Image (cartoon, rainbow, N blue to C red; front, side):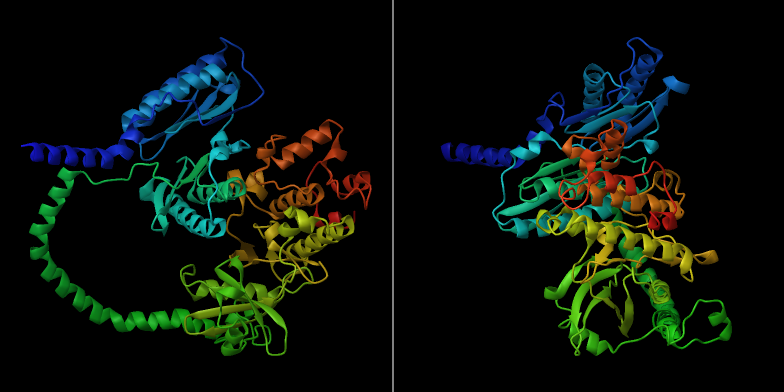
Length: 597
């Protein structure tokens, strides 16, 4: 009897230990202190129509958010209108969601007497504003708990796995509609070490903006917590990783599982033979045609780049002659990169990975290996090759040719030994070499490259992804604009690229999808501010000086303290007044005008 009781107690103890992580999650109090909060300095009047509308809004969010996990609403009209949204973490139960939003709504009314505010808890977040969220300048939050995390023993190895995990979760959350912009996952580094990750976006933003937000969040996360065992960034998208499981793993209800198993057991023997026979017939009929179509789309189309099939196609400008599109021996290019070795990897670019190579004559090259996963057909390769072959300018990265063999597609560019502009702006050691003359020449180089794209090239090109890591530097620190790999050729010879990093994107493009040369001018302006100040726009809110670098520059300008904006390293080689008077203006300018000043 004693032995039996001991066995029962042992089994009970084992079961309790297995359930302990879940119990901890379930018992986490929703009334705990918030993870963070952000509010504006502009307050509303007590007992005003705005406050009454805010109370009604928060009541609506408290009542409805738990039904789907997300809710947005607006209450009132004109200047007293209030917009709000609430989001619950994707793995929490409906009742926990309801309790959290109710508590967050009460707390935000108590501590945030502002016209706009946001508060984050473990299980939810609540936000309100006097203006639509789509036109707000939004900044993220760096919780204090990040500084309490321990350091990992092998930061480089840890970061590599963390980056892959967060990248995969970002794609799942942003583009897998079934996941409702929420994803969790894990990656095992060793027997005793696993990284657990969670990402989530508010559901009122498109997938592309969710992806951009999460990529920016990961940049902030890397800056604060790259060597830590955990970290959290709170934004309109949220990102978190830990070395312990902190979320609930989705499970299938036992009753539903049994029901589906019963259905499968009954249906498979009945329908499987019919499906198999039908599939075989369709497969035999379609195989030959499919193979022929694939070969035409992936090989003939690429071959047509060098051997135009009709005069009409050449006249339309859709194909190039061999004198404009040099092909290089595939084996030579492969040998130049040591068989495309990872040791020669320079970084990740549009459509694939970039490797360094050395040709037999000693010339260095950069080789972009197009990813089979990323391209949807030879048409994309054709568009990129046509575009870059037509663009030749001192301030654009020069295209040397391409090598194609079967499924392998390699694009060859001139090699840029000084890598990209962001390294020199934001690296403390490199910045010492970055005097005003060098920076001034780089600014002019970017402007000349853009002017060529807009006015002097065969096509009218709007880059739409202009940022410091897309500005490369040669031996002489000459700026060259890169990354046309995502180009698509549209009617009227206008090229559109995919959405860029949100830190450099123009407001009218971000909110309305409207783009023009002015969109690139805005991006150019952000880069200009970064070059002059030596500060990064992304994550600038962490300095607590202002929400963004742009807001900081504008504030100093209005306060008459603009000289404080200039990088202190520059004042040794050029007076700050000269720098500012030459480049800072109140409105976007024409690129040719920028070159004259």
